[in-house]
Each structure stands twice: as C-alpha cells, then as structure tokens.
Length: 341
Image 1 (tube, rainbow, N blue to C red):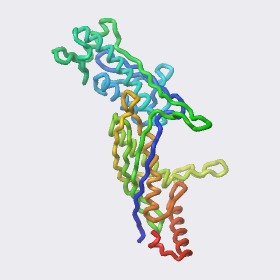
Image 2 (image 1 turned 90 degrees about the vertical axis):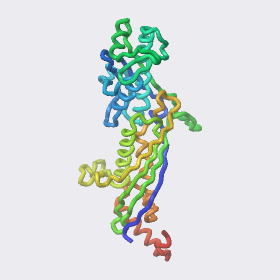
Image 3 (image 1 turned 120 degrees about the horizontal axis):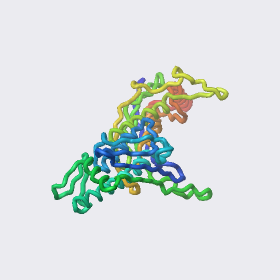
Image 4 (image 1 turned 45 degrees about the vertical axis):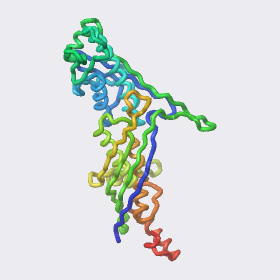
C-alpha cells in the first residue's frame, strides 16, 4: 500500500508577555465631541488585528460602536508606551490598559450626567452611543452627554496602566515567577504519507486553545489557522541553509513555503478560561497557536509509517530515507515489516 494515514496529538503551555521581567503598557482614552472615542497608545499593528481588538474593547467599556473609536498616532514621542508587538502580549497588556483608561473616562462622564439628572451614578447605563438612567425617562446621545459634561468644565478622559508581577529565575534553585498568565492548547493532526515518495500531506488539524476571553472570536480563529500554516511550513518544507556564513536558500525556488494547496482543513475550538488578574480576563493566542502543530504532525507520521523524524523539516527525502532504513532494519532482524507496524 503506497499511502498510509496516521493521527498524532500534542499539547502545550505558554507564558504570556515578557519573560522573567516586568512588562508594562499605558493608554489614554477620551470621550470626544459628538460622542466618539479617542484612544492613544504606542501599540504597533503588524497584521495581528490589535487595532480592531482595541476598538472593540474601548467601545464595549464606554458604550459606543467600534466604528466610533479612533486610535491615534502610535509614535511613543506623543503617546504612552505600549512596548513591542511580540510575546503574545498585545491583547493582554494593551487591551487591559485600554479597558482601564476607557472605564476611567466613562466614570467621569457618568458622574457628571448623574449629578445633572440628580440620580445615582449606579443607575447610569451606556450602549450603542446612548446614555440613560435605568428606571427613568432620562436618555440622551453620547454626544449630548459630552456637551453637558464639557459645559460643566469636565473633560471625560482617563488613563490606564497595566503591568505584570513577574521575577527572574533564581540561579541556584530555579524558583521564580517568569510569567503572570499562561495559556494551554492541544492539537490533533491527521496525515497521509506516501511510502513511495516520502511525501507527507496533512489532511486536517483539530486545535483547541485556551485564550482567556475571546474579544474577537473570528480573529482568534484566524490566529490559530495562521499559526498552524506557519508551523506546517517549518515542519515540512522550510529549510534555511547556510554555506560558510552565506545563505544558499536566497530565493523561493529552493526555500519552499506553504501555498493554499498545502493548507489543511482546520477545526478551531476556543476555550475561554478567563485570566483572574487582568480586568478583561483576556490572555492571548499569537505564538501558542503554532507550538503543538509540529509535534502533532510528527506523531501522526510515526502513527502512519512507524518512523520518528527528529530534525526539521520532515522533507519527502528525509521521510523516505527513514522508511527505507526501517525496512532494512527489519530485514536484518528478519522481522516482517507489516507485523512490526
């Protein structure tokens, strides 16, 4: 039989934000004229969708529509520090500090409007660009509320800062608190291995990941799918080589990347186990999405043809050599290959 199928499973844990050092981020929020919201933070958008997430967070906390949220210039010479885009920290660090800043801005607005209507601040509710007092007929637009607020000499703005309580590792016993929040994940891979050519085709990936609280579920699924495709490239195709300090894979003719034809069907399962420390309960799903993929695929290859690939990438040549070496080993020991599998 030329083609054999197998399944493999792998699990992971991952620490969110900077490792063994205090992480930090800051943001400013203002409810502006017309009831729009302005957020200022030094966040960097590199395609991970953080600007959409921050707009959703600010809109939810203040009570406006995401389309009414503007994220300002992220130049750190003019905005609060948010640090780098990495370590799966953007939603966790910047999302939390934007939430804190937005809550503070809303609180200032609510205090003024509650006093203006002579009602308890606890009765004030906001949503979809409107503000009202529960149990009364008081209801106005957010824009009108800002006008009233500013007429009384108050600008509804807030600032937020969020940091981690982490430490380095003790050089003697290794004790420490390198991360504040952790995520967990598990993936199952199904592959088909061609025993004639050694080619491995990934038929499907089932991925379950804890993300804390999913601010944008579709975005989370996109992160999971993107991480899996990236891992498949590393695990099966991408082979960066150096020859005396110079790359010998300087073009895509030799450095092979996954294409749309190589992407399997991915079933994403989002597990929401809220972080107990941050105000939003969010964690992250950047790098963790790709960590279990390669070991799951390698385990699936073993399940299919009984060979362990211990160096990456698992190219057809490498897989085929391993299959042939296994057959030779069985022949030398007079063990039928079928029975051994």
